[in-house]
Length: 175
Image (cartoon, rainbow, N blue to C red; front, side, top):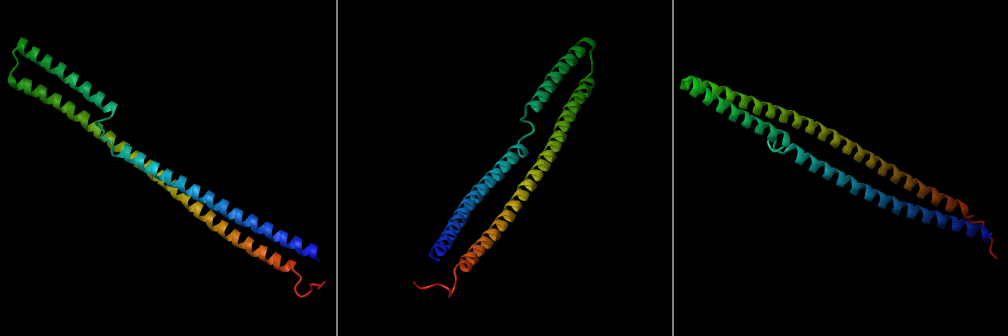
């Protein structure tokens, strides 16, 4: 009889220890998971700000295109002046040629701006996709926390029930 009660008490104590340790380990893991999730959200926000709000004229492709356009305009203007000196072109002719050059510059800058709009739309779509993935992960974490809490409560009640059933209420022998 004494051995049964001792084993029942030992079983209850071990179960209680395992349950408490499991709760602390679970809480620690959940805390770490939430911290990592917060870090991922911050990283995503930083990436979005760096890429979305950057100036399209500051990237290397845009600078190279503008430099090529400047060099092309400079050569074209030199050729126009040389042509004018040799052939005696009128000022109206020189103005018309300069207008064509300015139109080319305008077209190139318009194309750069259009590409920038496309780039921003792609970045925004990627950002929305990443945010949805983070929200989905957060929902899964909340569901896991809920399930873990319910399981812990059920285990605690089960442990209490086993401990109560293991004691022979009113049937103890007095020695």
